[in-house]
Image (cartoon, rainbow, N blue to C red):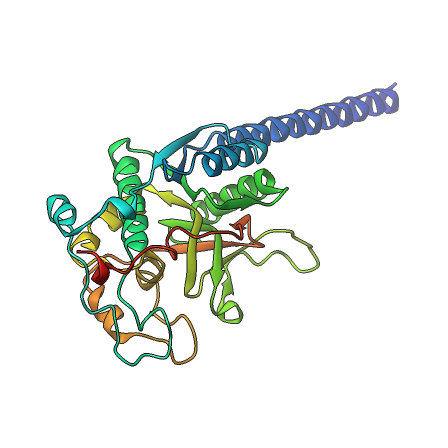
Length: 300
């Protein structure tokens, strides 16, 4: 009887182990589903001009199809409605050092555009909203955003992986996570989540190089606080150049580095930024209200 009892005991232990394994698997599935729900319900601000209702409606439709369930439309500051008097009433001062006489790069050879000013003020207003609502993190997106079909999966995976790496002490807590951007030096970017040898992964997290475009990003509470302490409104310049200068050097391309921009933001809090690879979204081709706007010098 002893061998039989041992066999029964072993079978019972095996069954208990298998049951525990199934329970663990079910718990993991529930955990991942909760993560998925949290990602898809992440507060999202869609920056959109009120005078572009068709573009706004199309962007909301794309966001819904991408799985985003908590989208707020944020009326963009319209550059057409800005002038020097309006800026003074808002306490905004433009950085007069932006234009470089004789610069070969066309963006440096001209003054700021009113569309760039409106874009910068729109994002700044969202930063204030994130801080006011005390959100832990939120997506900030522009209405020309196009989402990858796997957006929800990529977003969920990126946030979960980043949370895990921070909890393990392998990464500093993030201030900002790029979802869509134009990396100017992709070969310089360092992956921060190397998988075990032989494991194939679809998503990587990187330390971003200088990156143009603020198509979409996750802004964390700490990042919102730092941006609001940066003094951006006292020396406003294009957001595309300001934001990456807070986590690295201003160098959008060979021969295009601007030490004066680095010096301008030297006293601002530094951002801890990461980015997803591949892109979770990108900018749609089409008319840019920012680029099509007047230069500030032409209307004061």
